[in-house]
Amino acid sequence: MALRQTPSQTVGPYFAYGLTPRQYGYDLASIADGTMARADTGGERIRVEGRVFDGAGAVVGDAMIELWQADSLGRYAHPADPRGSNAGFTGFGRFGTGTDPQQRFVFDTIKPGRVSAGEAPYLNVIVFMRGLLAHVYTRLYFDDEAAANAADPVLSGVPAERRDTLVARRETTQTGIVYRFDIRMQGDRETVFFDV
Amino acid sequence: MTETYGARDWSSQPPLIHPDYKSTLLRGPTKKPLPLKQSLSEVTGPVHGAECVTGHDADLTRNGRRNGEPLGERIVVGGRVLGDDGRPVPNALIEIWQSNAAGRYVHGADQHDAPLDPNFFGGGRCVTDADGRYAFRTIKPGAYPWPNHHNGWRPAHIHFSLFGPSFATRLVTQIYFPGDPLLALDPIFLGVPADCRDLLVAKFSIDRTEPAFALGYDFDFVLRGRHATPMES
Image 1 (cartoon, helix red, strand yellow):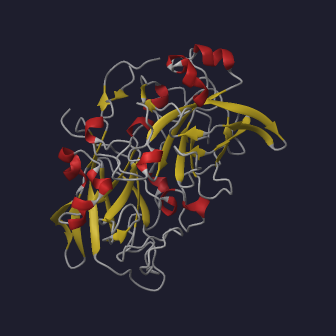
Image 2: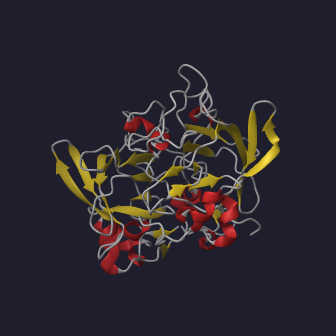
Image 3: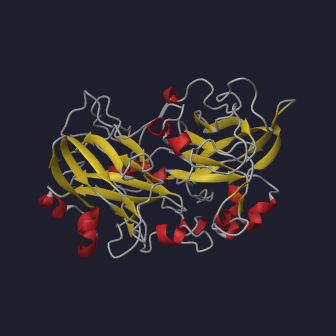
């Protein structure tokens, strides 16, 4: 390896007008936000929402969450996925926790399909915030996929007592299907993060 | 065979808990991240092309103007985005945000008692060309105080967010300026291992300097590079 990788630094408290300007009301177009599914996107409509908690149990109001996901048939909108993808669905979302009254992240998307036969469906998640010197990766699995989750090579490799931290809870609400997924940076139920 | 990306080199990265930077104490994970073999999910990532960049997005001396020029020292920051294998990374989306020359952010939560500049926004973006090159015109940001410790001041810096070709190559960082006396006192900068701190300091360049207009600074970014190892499927 000839070159050293550029060190990460924290996203800091003031990312909103650069990275999530539309969500926060700044006068700059956004490359992505929490609305990932478009009118023509195929698949089951879901909302993914949750909060980020620090080691003292306080809700983090200046975190930014990024999602990367496959379409409803398990295909990524990227040249490395030769299957092509759901037209118009980029699979990328980004949301800051500073605009919701409860400091939630909220994504309106579709439930992804399995990327390969042996895997359960999941969302790829990156967490950024002030006080986090390098971003961390995690995954969101779905609690209504118990059989697939049990066979998933990544989830089943996580110590059994920590797997719950990666599984979102499905609820049917008046406005549709919601998966609730909280991220805990520390503590007894610290979310499992991955060295991707 | 699909290419994967080399491991994140934690020896060049700051620790997730760095006590001198107090916010890390409750926000940095305490457990070691679990290893994850790369699959299609990690070697793919959002695709951003030139359509993400419009107008003066890469020229912060222009994209916030209302009734005149922004105040401060005009600079050009540019260079290349490379993989750690030395190969250029084309079509990489770069987003930046920064304070104005007085050390004040446009962000509504910034309460620092320094003036906003009506002609400076401080956010912008660009996409690297076929050789991995990028450049921004902007105003040199100012230092500003922060509440981490008594008389704490952040050195002048520009926040950078880069995607590269995959979710695995994501990078968010800050770049600094040479000769800044605050670097020796900044817990965020000093969180980086000593032998890698220079990697975050831009270099003055008379070649990049635009005559009679703006001083030039060079900064190359190094993301995780491609490695032709079999992908877990």
